[in-house]
Length: 209
Image (cartoon, rainbow, N blue to C red; front, top):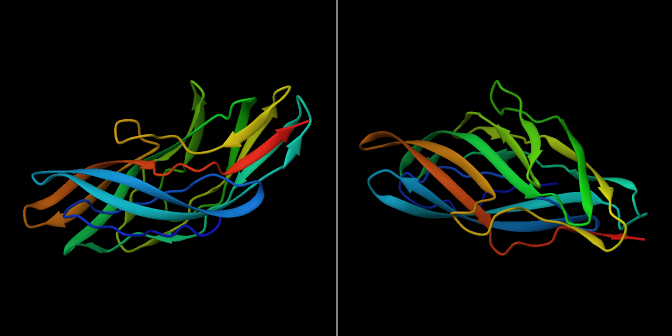
């Protein structure tokens, strides 16, 4: 996954936004637009839009029952220092989800690299057919960070295709969640934020055969 660029970040106290995404056949760059809603105190829900460019690698084909990897390599990103005149203090408590692809079995995942993500290293786990990358942060407003490279290990089924994409279909069924803390005229406020990819592209397609 290369180049992760934050886009439009509007809204009083909605504060910062960040993320990551999955793949395209063999190796390709994809821009994912996340539709986010920040539950800002007093002013209520605020809509936030962010774009993320991603470069992910996966094989075009795999043998039935064969092992293969999907590699997600995010580029550095920067947290905004100011949103609508409000200072962004930090963003924290991240969880990014993606479904284990149909016609495959999740074996495990490795994380490598990453920087300025807080004192607790990111982890990845899978349950109920969903893999989740998470870390508590915080990442200070105005600072540059880099998410870890994720290597997901999968085993192919017996036939069909294996498509990778992100989880999330709505604010109530998010694929990405985090909290943003900002200074405002009423003091520091925390805005829990829920995001989903809109539209939600297929990043990689691997054919079994």
